[in-house]
Length: 42
Image (tube, rainbow, N blue to C red; front, side):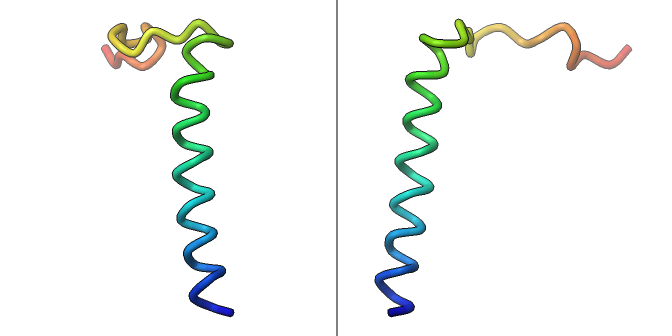
């Protein structure tokens, strides 16, 4: 049961990451080519 659980965990991580990558850009209007102003240290 460890191996099927491990495979399902990896598959779930991949699915959630891809879903947030593609849907996040459409739903939250995220532009990956723009670096956010709040993340810049001065």
